[in-house]
Length: 120
Image (tube, rainbow, N blue to C red):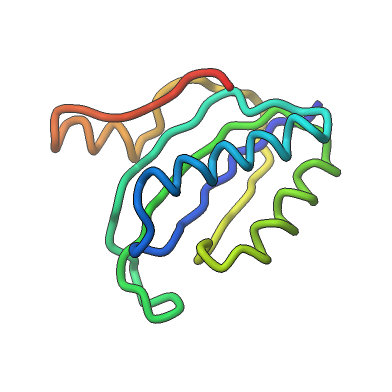
């Protein structure tokens, strides 16, 4: 199966618990379509480069996924319909790294801790 990285940004008004629920919903969609979310990271509430839907900040999350293409298409369809999701990007990757992302590494150096979840 192909490997993917999926990053999405949610509205700043929602709570981190709601973002976690959204990640769980994504994992369910992937699992129901024959794939699995291997690695997840929550990057926190961060500033956006420009306003998106009148928001200047957003909750960022990353998922690394091992899944067939139809599961990704369903995931993207559901995310387009979700009003809490400001933007998302799914990229196909060569391998499925479980290494901490560069964004999270920079946050660790800056803040001293991070939140990640290996496995689904």
